Length: 255
Image 1 (cartoon, helix red, strand yellow):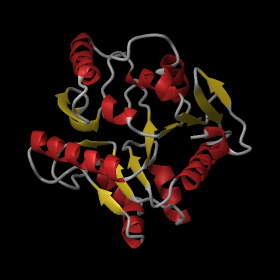
Image 2: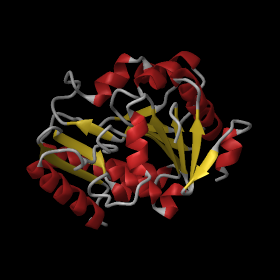
Image 3: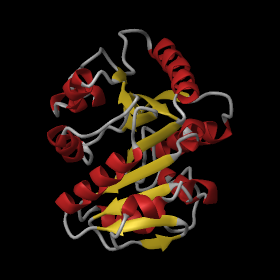
């Protein structure tokens, strides 16, 4: 995969192996991400979407453009609860109109929530991911980074009180050590109950597009590019050489 060909003539820098696109505005950042996604995806591509506030405008943009192609679409992470509960990531994406667009284009959407218990829900989605990764020869994930350094549904330990640092660190260590599953679940103060693609699953993505937008993300990115444990700041996962080599970071900040 040639990341530079996806970016075209857009100015970029290479920072620790990650291609970084510094857009002048949030709108330009979203447009750059949409252009890259349009070049990369086709009917043989599995697309995975993150929740959170950052990608909402991006999802609204690609809904309006009505040019995205994909073979299947899945979720990166989800807040556990009943299907379409008010804080669910799937509902947020649905409200942008994107799921309706997928339905119009006969693009299969794989949600996480099935109104089952959390362990069974996570197990079912693990099976779904194995099928999707096996069936589709290309995959891409749209990722975000929280101000505390979390990414996907993987919790961060930095800038939190001691017990939360300890608990989140243990959760992330288990994910790092887990080489057999693709999906993890947990309950943690500040995050609630979460189901997420873990590091093993994220490592299987062929292309990772990170959206880090807003002035508050400047310090977040500075922390990400500092040496330190992944348990403290999960977004440092993207600095692993084999991951950085397939990652594009798009931001409206100076990195």
